[in-house]
Image (cartoon, rainbow, N blue to C red):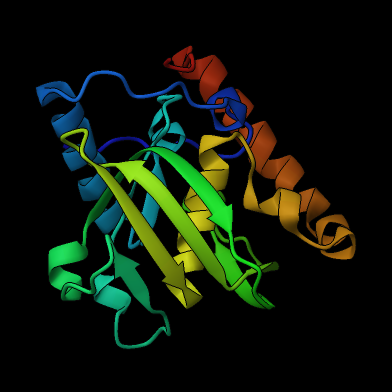
Amino acid sequence: MLLRVTQFGEPVLREVGKPVENFDASLKQLTQDMLETMYASKGVGIAAQQVGHALQLCVIDLQARGADVDFDYDFDGKKPPLDLLMPLVVANPELKLGRSPLSIYEEGCLSFQGIRGDIERPERVTLTYQDVSGVKHVLKATGFLSRVIQHEYDHLQGILFTDRMDASVKRELKPVLATLKATAKELMSEQKLKPKF
């Protein structure tokens, strides 16, 4: 089922997610709906906050982008084929940023229609998380996969990619962000939308 993607200005995007405690059929359904919504929006990752749930939960799938972006990974000490690794369902993540060079890449976000900006992030991360069944895994990632993991992890902490933009870029985007925020406020007022927890 397609879910509505929350937009900048909706309070749930600033909520720190609560831990996932029940790895049951409803969680499986939510992650399937999140994936379907992400694919329909042509995204590579989406966090629970972006579909109205303040949870420590996100999904990632780079299969469609595999050939045109550079990344590497180690999953539980092995390197399975990408189609066995993806899509990733990430619950209750712990992120360790590697001591690696920083890189700049233009990011976008499904909750910020039409806005893109250069974001500086570490090239390497180690992600410890639980899958949709509650099984713990360790994923070491570099390049584009590392960047997507960091972007989605930020969402789970209530941090938006615009928070990481250079101050001069944010100043330029201020009128656009104000419009997005006003639109979200109007939508919430019309539909009496409330954040889901």
